[in-house]
Length: 451
Image (tube, rainbow, N blue to C red; front, top):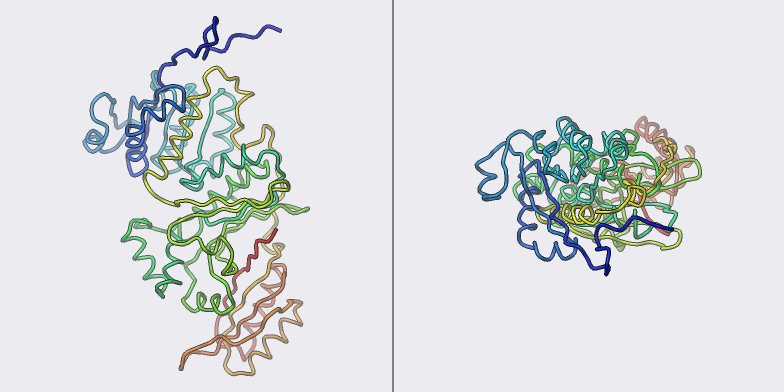
């Protein structure tokens, strides 16, 4: 059967034909944009050897033209109009690293409708508008690549879409926000309270002046929505992710976890069940010996359970200019290799050619172990707490006093068996109504993450 010749090879001896460089237009020249430009320039020959063609930036849109000119030098067109770059005729692929979800959506869709491929590190954009963006890309036969949007230097999107493609993924769980992991590491290792650790994170450049997206768990939830779509073949479902940040954590909670043999991490968890998918981000207790419990500082770590592969782990930097650039350029190399390929042969945007909506378990139905810290007025409180939980159908695995210094309030610690969140919530409401309970109770999930 006759097939059109592959344009990458000549028609005589099958020798490679030199392809013109992939022409890149970039929006944004901040931390990630500058890092991407530096790495492209420094490793130009190596990247071209791997891509089969050169990759060169031809146009950049920025607010500060003078600053950008000092980075890119001569030969790159500069403008303060992002849409001009997105629709420029001599641009093959748009790299969007400016961030945000409003104008960025318009720039990306503008590029797509003009037949441009898109590479972005903007997880908020894809979590909130990914359905429309991916649909437009399919309609116009172009690619949207986003490895840098999920876990910076960790190639987890490629692992889910390609390396683990033979597997039915059972769950994905990980530390996917470097800012909060740094804060929690400092609270445990240096004994800081939350506010002190946050100030330190900001001083070191790990946290923004307004850190709300990180510390409230929103950034991790954006990433989890993309991970779950690639793991389970479902649409990006950010609105249904259950989110809890780390702002309520106290040094007392860190000490509580240590006493029980656990460490607290902000975990993003997507788990398959017969009746739906868990999608949640929350501070959780991990056994101190668990691999993810050893992920400290601003590093990220992700575990994936596949039915054939078993558990695989991915570890790497959770923040950084060139670390993110590494993922952005890997996406550019994938785009550079597309010459002559039909759209149907490409790796799907979310790992599946056909997506299926899947039900997401409601908050009350999610069943895990829990750790409760209950302040009480007297030593009789331990008996009161244990008896009430038993009446409320909460299985108790451990019930003990928290070690405390002179003058500290008495704290009862409870490690429960697996129980639905709704049952735990009702039990906590009942505890708060007991005269023996001296103040607000703290409650954290416990995640053994076993096979």
